Length: 194
Image (cartoon, rainbow, N blue to C red):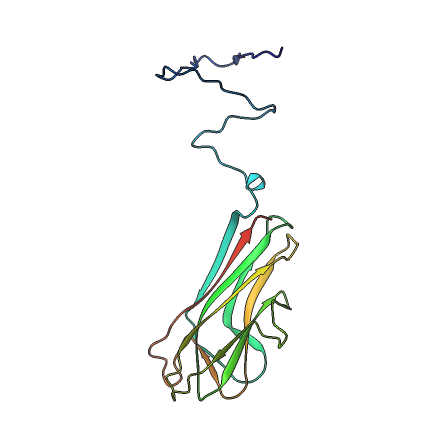
């Protein structure tokens, strides 16, 4: 039969009391068959012990800087954010909320670049296609980009957005005919335990 030993600390002088609750019901406390330290309300759980799906860290960047673009793929203003994963088994969730406008009845596309490599794009090379409404300078639209990446590394990662337009000019965080009423765009990345 196994035994339970309560061992004091030779250096301490305090008295620790194990007190029973005010109850008329018999209870049995079964100790786990492993070594460890009892957790308390002030205990911190290490990242390594968090279950899969837990958020390990969040990095975010909000842009208030207006930008314009015409033509082929290029970086979308200053829309980028960096993160260094704690574990190579982690996944990185990228979510961006964008305010874009276009002159004329044109279309634009957005994609995600990770350290120089395009990720999560469709067969046409884009991750998200957005259309102007063709209202002669009042073509505002809110578009979003979302992708769950598996970079398999603990090295620093920079996620940035890129854009492309088929014709005319695209605008970020501003209107076509004015910069008096600027908007904001945000890109956020979550490290998710694998």
